[in-house]
Image (cartoon, rainbow, N blue to C red):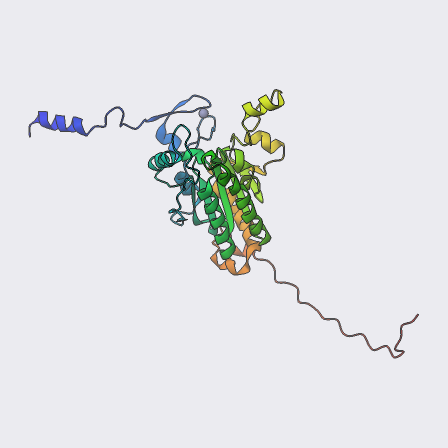
Length: 322
Ligand SMILES: [Zn+2]
């Protein structure tokens, strides 16, 4: 092989302009151009203005779950098309396209893992699959995760990133709102915690059901959270809406959220909350804990021994003084 052939082969192995990955990322908020590795190392958060870009379900799981502990469940559940729904494309085609794009069969990934050593049922939405919409499969996955949590005496975390109920399933998708809410009510009755994490965006039927039912509701900074879009509300009520309306910070100020937490701090926050809740879940579960602080610090003190009072000497009179 002469030098010319080697050079030709080398040229062939190079990706074309279309195939080559883009090495630069533009921040949608401050328009800064950044090297993609820098942004990736910060879990898709702009180093300059802290804008939280959207991330997929797998990346989210990698960020939250303790390394190597996540086991996915119900990955084989696939949406059916009970209405034979067709808009610009058929529902079947949309599902197939999303499946090809994401490698997933629904907009929800659910499973079990530990966070900070505490076992938990984790449900994560992926916005890239049909806008993270809530259909029958997604609802069923959430309910099954809740049932597993009840069975195993664990808590549930749902990380939402969704445009709302999936219109292609019409009433079937709306029913998931009540179905998931009912399951979470059962979880609450069992005294088990549910933490809802809202990320950009959490809208429609998702925000109108399980996303707002958390014992603790946490949002990422700047996330769009609401029911109807701003344009629809403006048309309906015919009034100007305040600046930053439907963003995390506005909702926090008006009492809808408990915390706004940076992505880099999310795992630590969840681990602390889980540790706090876990102390009350089930004593038998304590042996599974690997607390980040000394275990002795969290042990409840031995109860005071109950002293039974000496019986009163019998009243000789056999009647009271009155
Ligand atoms: Zn930025």
